[in-house]
Length: 284
Image (cartoon, rainbow, N blue to C red; front, top):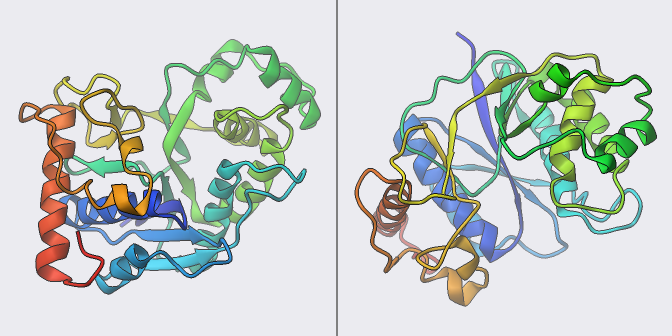
């Protein structure tokens, strides 16, 4: 049986810590799977929520911080390939595929994960933009890519990467990121596509994810990526330690079965999960 190891790439701060707690709760209750959380080092001790995660049974690992390496600039998304490379070290031989996720994701139901290199379709990506073509040439890809090839590379998390390829893929992905200038937040996504081309691989698109761009829409996909937000609820209201304590007590109201409704429901359930089962001073 093909085994997939779900891996979350996170930084050592309260904002990502509460997201990882919600992710872990969602993963173990909806999928019955134990994820790995990679916490990229900042020179400080882990945030208390990561210790609580470990006590809850989550495999939490420290990983080197790659965000300020390369050209000396500060780009947090360089930690994505860093998490992949660290996962290649800590996963065992039974883990055939690494499923690389962002912390701001939850599971709405069971997921049929593919057994091939894949990423989830991203509608807004456009490889015809000049900055992508300039990065392609800096990265040493001289040939033009066809329109159909570009379409297959329009993907975001979750990325499903064979474990045996993860180390080389991560190193090449870092190099591809550094071919982009000036920095844009979406560089990491285009860089993954260029990595696929550079290594001569074939990437397949999945359709596993709903987003909270339209929070009142019915849940249709098994994964929710709550990377957006509006006046009713946004993750960006829970950035500091003080703010993060309130995330578990959402005041927003949403209909059952909607994207926002599922998110709010899981936040409340996660609050009880950590309070009842893993009581500590840092519990919500």
